[in-house]
Image 1 (cartoon, rainbow, N blue to C red):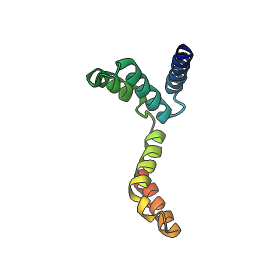
Image 2: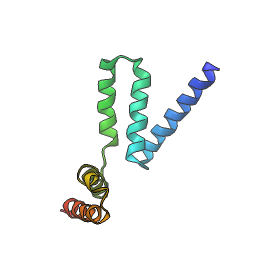
Image 3: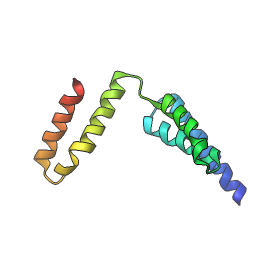
Image 4: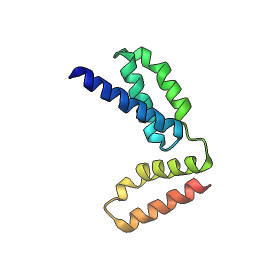
Amino acid sequence: MERKGGSMVAILVVVMVANCVSGQSIYACWGGCYNQCFLSSGGVQAERFPCYYLCLNSCVPRSAADYQYYCQIGCSLQLCIPASYDGAAMEECFGRCSNLCNV
């Protein structure tokens, strides 16, 4: 049974890394890459850092549209969460983020 579970984890990691290569989702790329680093390091923290660096290098957004998208996500998560109980304030905050990231 353990062998079957290990095979399933390996298949999952391969699928996630393939997602990274095809550029479908930056979060899928980071998640798959970091999981692979964690699994291959055997739990030793110092062995993970070079692998994490490679993940950052291979998963960083490359196009202007990617940067704008992640700017808007970051801005809205950081600035608009306090306004989440007031719909009008939240909409205004999202508008400010959109303007900020279009610069």
